[in-house]
Length: 67
Image 1 (cartoon, one colour):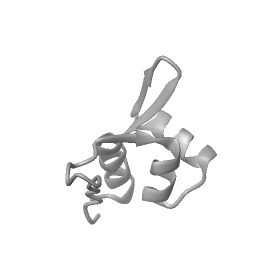
Image 2: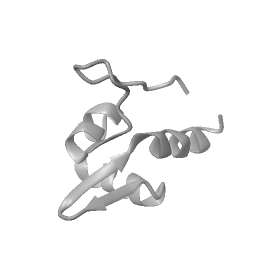
Image 3: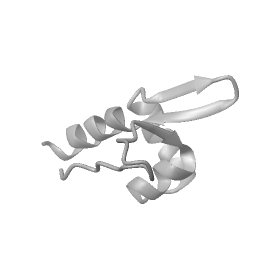
Image 4: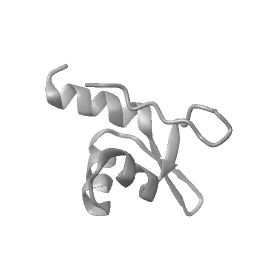
């Protein structure tokens, strides 16, 4: 699977993001993204913030595709 490296406006590699950013990055809906994040153990909760660890999701997606 091709690397999905995303850089912020400041040129910094983004490792986590909100659900909306993850949906855009992976091209899936909110409910599907939440399920994928839970399955990949990639959910980070800080207070009421729900963040997704992109490297863990990438690794999970690679395992699904057999790479």
